[in-house]
Every structure is written in structure tokens, then in C-alpha cells.
Image (cartoon, rainbow, N blue to C red; front, side, top):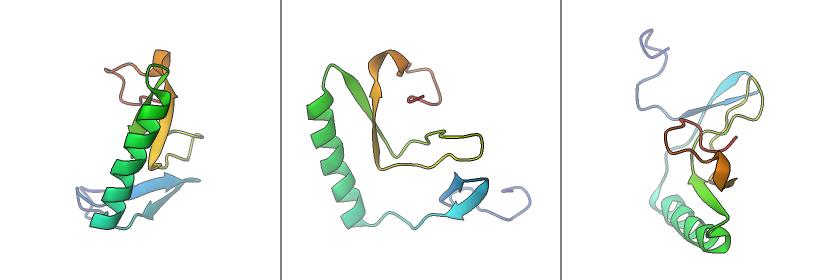
Length: 86
């Protein structure tokens, strides 16, 4: 879709129920809240899980949203894996 000119390389989109949906740009307030949420969740699950921040999360074959934060079990969090949380 990038090659066809439908999306630019830096367009923010997520896949929901088989549809690509535009995501708004991240503004300073949003970024600040994400950083604080990441800090709080990371402290809460330290040693038990990692917190994936705005990483794609495959929920179904045609849905891959990017949640703000997602605590993941440590065994599933392989650093070489493109998807940390399964």
C-alpha cells in the first residue's frame, strides 16, 4: 500500500477486524501519559512480566491493534521475536 501511494511510510494505522484504520498522531500530552503508564505498570510487574508499549498485538487473524501498554509474561517475551506478547 505504501508502494501504491495509499499510505506514506510514516502513516500511523492499525488493523482492526480486517480494516486499516488511521490513528491520530501522538501529541505531547498523550506521550507523557504513556510514559507514566509504562513506569507504573513496569514497577507493578517487575520480575514477572515486561510491558510492551504501543507494540502491535495480534488478537485475531484480522486484528492487530497497538495498545498503549500491554504486560506480557516473561517466557513469551523473546527479544528476537517481532511480537513480544502472544
